[in-house]
Image 1 (spheres, chains in turn blue, green):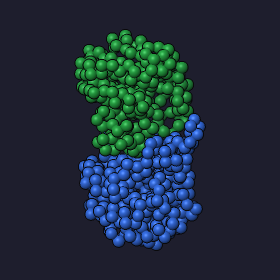
Image 2 (tube, rainbow over the protein chains, first blue to last red; image 1 turned 60 degrees about the vertical axis):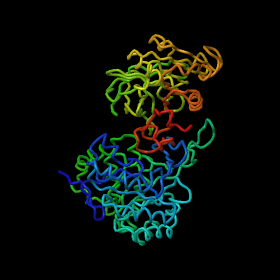
Image 3 (cartoon, rainbow over the protein chains, first blue to last red; image 1 turned 90 degrees about the vertical axis):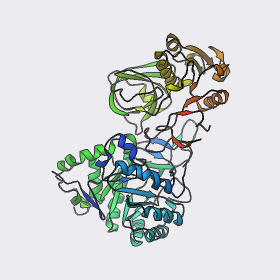
Image 4 (tube, rainbow over the protein chains, first blue to last red; image 1 turned 135 degrees about the vertical axis):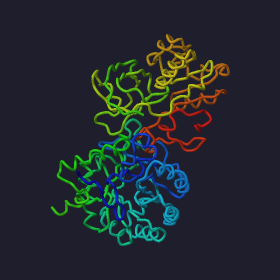
Length: 305
Length: 244
């Protein structure tokens, strides 16, 4: 027997497998495919204060070992998420729910987090300061340590829930951002968001995406995510959720050895609706194959070797 | 929705740029004509969505146009090859709206779900009129199959090499005598059709998709009833919902 449970700050997870924001809708739709209570937790679709349609079509493009997306934070707005989507998910999901919050101003982050703080069904707030697909917001907070710190401090003032900051890889030194967030009071970090990319259509000689650029995710980003989690683990004391290109149980172990306390699965969910289920099912035997009995014990172990 | 490994039974060319692929496996996911499948192809990350053209207890067919690297790779599939496919995706047409004499309109590759619907309706003894538009006589798809089912078939070609010269809208006459309209084809064609019909209608949309089952919001469109996902809330939408 192996023990797959992990601690994410003060939250105990039965296993470290969490579907990433934007790749699992509001979660309940996957309950038609399998019992989603087997997941460690769920991050719901990123929300903003007002409803957003997002970017024009097309929003998706094929890439080597992955894909580009430029959804543009489509969501029904924080009030509808709280009033309709979270109750629907809670009906079929008893494990921790993580809300993902985006904003175009510090005030917007604060407004959303104030409202989410009042929702008992939310266990943790993941603050997205790293969306590459919207202008004048999102990633601009994620590439300047002072702006990031301001978001963290402002959000921490209005909520008692744990606050994790989701970081962008589109930066020279991610550890500077990680440290700025930790110093400002963040309870943890999620990394990495997508890498900014572009594809060009040879037939009409213009970018494939209407937004021109999009976020690259999928298997191809995995080594970059592992490297950044490894670097950030050395730079900060707060827990890290590792995300980027994970597509199997071995990838989960690798990400945890790099320093992740838990992992998020993103693009793999779009290729197969059963991706997270299969990873959870494969995890115990994969642990056995590598002589691991307590999953919690391997977090960051690659740094001691 | 069903995910299964399907075996290629047949893959043959039906026009200069279009193939029909027949796959054997679990077809329990299909309930309505107009639903689609999402095919995983070796060497590609994202699945490719295709309307189902027909299905029975143990196999189904899709029609695909060679339009890029994914479909180009599909033309090389051989009998016995296997594919990971999500089947029975999307809502499909509401066959209960058909009435006594529905009109079915297809343009180009839009023939696939329209053929599926015609097959379903004729099996229920509802005989539709089918208008199909193509670029030229070489591109005409499924005409004989639809006639042999008993459908009244009207062909239009842009170059006039077969049937009525022009677009499907040039063949639209006395629309009021039809009980309902079902349509699938390029958006400009469907928009033109929508402006000509007085009775109710359903339109099947195409979209570049990420997942195909409602998770990523990659294919969202604005409708009169709010933002909808083509893959999960569609691909079939009512005339009253569509904002062209």
